[in-house]
Structure formats: structure tokens, C-alpha cells
Image 1 (tube, rainbow, N blue to C red):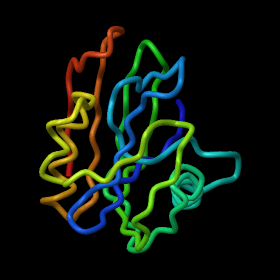
Image 2: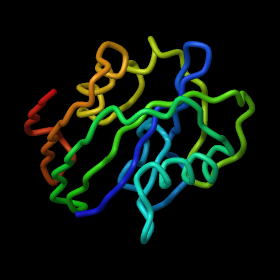
Image 3: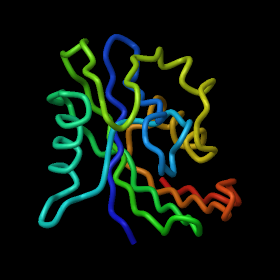
Image 4: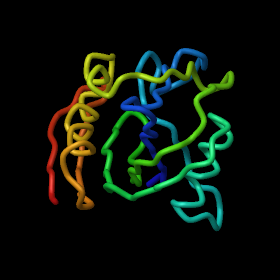
Length: 152
């Protein structure tokens, strides 16, 4: 099982989102997602998300909070355990990114973007709940959500 991190960085009522349109072989192609990536050897999830945010967006994070743990069952790509965070930043300016196009999106508009179906389940919890939650998302080989199980 792969170990990954994902962060929704907030500034002035907006989340930093990445439109995944730059890589040829990308399981997230065409989707909008937060910032994150895979844990490297001997790296904690907190260290990973801070590194990924520096590498992908040139940002140092403040108010970093673990919000959830998501188990992705993905037959087409392999299963994944993701540590979900929220954070804030002082930086407004966005650099070019090899992974996709970065954009500040008003939080109320995020659900209207092309997202993974499972993201539509957990993103509202980032706005309404403070406790850490656990979520299992099961996808089929075509990338469609088959089931989900939420625990707070």
C-alpha cells in the first residue's frame, strides 16, 4: 500500500488547487486536487506534506492540521493510505509547477470543479468538522466510486 499526503491550503477564503493537466501518465489527469505526494523513506507524514508544498508550490505552511486518514482502494493503480491535512500560508504568488497548474479557487466553488467522486465526500468535512476522521473509498477499475465508509 502506498503512503501519501494531501493538503488543502487556505488563504482568504480560497483553497490552493492543482489542475492535473501536465503529465502524460497521470492517474489524476484532468482532475483538480490539493497539494501532496508520496512519503519518502524515513519521512513522517508531516515532513512529507511540508516538503511537497515547498516543492510543488514554493510554500511554507502555517497552522498545519491532520484532518483525516483516507484509505483508497484503487484496483487500477494500487491501494493507497493518505494523510489528509489543512493548512494556511502567507504566500499569494504561485510558481510554475511540473505536476499541474496551480490556482487559488474560492472554497465555495471547489465542488463545481472536475474532482474525484470521493473528494466530494470528504471536502465538505474540512469546512464543517474539526475532529480527525477516517474514510474508506473503493473505486472500480474504471475510476468510478463503488462505495465509501466514513468514521469520525
